[in-house]
Image (cartoon, rainbow, N blue to C red):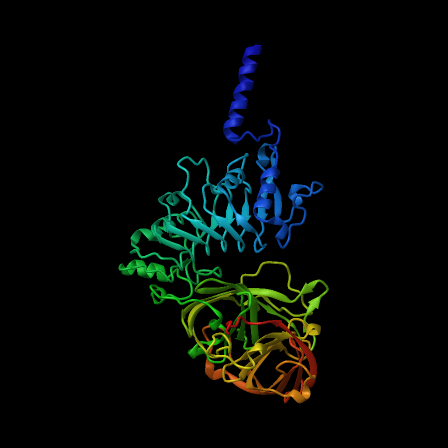
Amino acid sequence: MQSNSCRALSALATLILLASLHGSPASALSPPPPLPVEALSDFYEAMNGDEWHRNDGWLDPEVDVCDWYGISCVTEAPATGGYEWIGRIELPDNNLQGELTAELQERLWTYGPASTPSRELDLSGNAIRGEFTYFPWGTGDVNLSGNLLSGSLPDLPAELPEIELERLRLSRNDFEGAVPAGWDRLQLRRLELSDNRLDAGAEHAFAAMHGFEQSFLYLNGNRFAAELGEDITNAQGLAERGDSNVGAGLDLCYNDFLIEDPAVRDWIAARHVGSTDFEACLGRQRVAVDATASGSWYHPGRSGEGISLMILEQGAPLLYSFGFDSEGRQQWLFELGHAGDRWLRWDPVRETRGYFGEGIAADEDYRFVRSTGRFRADRVGTDTLSLHRHYYDLLACGPWEPQVVPPPGLCPPPLFDDRLDYHRLSRLAGTTCENGSDYQQYSGAWYNPQQSGEGFLIEVMPDDRAVVYWFTYKPGDSGEQAWMVGSGEMSFVPSVIPVGTENPAQLTVTLHQPQGASYGPDFDPGDVDPVEWGELTIDFGVPGTGEVQFESVIDDFGSGEFQIERLAAPMLAECE
């Protein structure tokens, strides 16, 4: 029989073995660690939580921290009994404003048995400022893009027991300097550093991408000016163009990279977003995005499709893309995006289904709106935009009709990905103090509140003419989109406007409904047939309102009238 001392030694050895396997005090043999409620409460106060768009449950003593808005708890170390921890903090575009101090970083990301959160941190699209002293290397997916973070990128600590980080998004901040050499130790699936002020260390960003297949590295819009050599090709996992529907895995645009080696040039071309001709965007200068970017834009080789862009009063860019789908039907996409000093982005862009004269289609709680990809525009000249379109052809996934709600299963649709120069087609009046019009206040987005999901985009130009887009749907029950466009001269017509109304006006246009072309590389402007649609008149009465009258020469559309209201107004110059 074993002696008591032998049994004690055996038990001690077992405990030591368990401890070595778990590497954490938070095992089934210990009390579960307390959740970092106090640190999260301080984070709420530091980020001006009372002004968030949503803060359900935060700081409410009657609500479990795992039920606070944006927080999800998970079970860590389940093989040893597990413990509950903060797994995800997801607060994108939620009006977080404040400084992420070094003390708060340390309390969230280095205290406790795991980083807070352990799986995913998404604070993108807010106004968080500060520099990094600590960093959540123990979090699998970190998205801090679209904030006001500054200073140098954080280097890895010399002693780091385990790096959980696989996806790191730091784009659209104000980081400067070099990518740290310590990042060679990372093994990332995704690294986004675009639109900062980084100027060195690009080779370390490439080195961080050596661990996974189908990986993505975005360095565009920085100040890199180095030669890229053969060593970058060790990042073999970067996704290749056409390899799948995930898109290409590398973006180097709007830097001054030099590539002398033809083999390296070919390697980059096979992986670069938008076009294999990536050198066309290297070293290219960009100009400021301001109110003068508003207007219609098109590519000369693709007449019949284009975009209407409007920088709104608060600075956000409203986009409507008009053209055709891959089967030749009219299609329009839209989104209210984000603007930087020299770029605009819409992620995602969306399409709809609906009925003419009724608006967007719905099936109980399901509204027929879905994402179709993303667009980005870099302003490379006063009258030129470089537009990158990342568009999924969802028609390949089967019908999407008001009578057929799409199944929840996954579908890998084909991807169309291009980068083209778009030239100005129209210029909004009043975007400078030299190009005003007495009618410029009528520019904007207008809609009928009784028919949500369709409406008008009006661009008043300096010569008192106006371009009108009507984004709507085909008559009948197909749910398919339709769009019409026309231009006409604005005029004052006091006789049809209530007495006392300021600057009453009327606009009459002949609309056309282009038909016949298709989306993608097979687009042929010669296929576009500008079918005459009919006449549209808009009487602008009380400020912010109007009355629409239409009469179509296409029988199914017929004729009618309805009231409209202003939905959004463009940013105009402030002039004395």
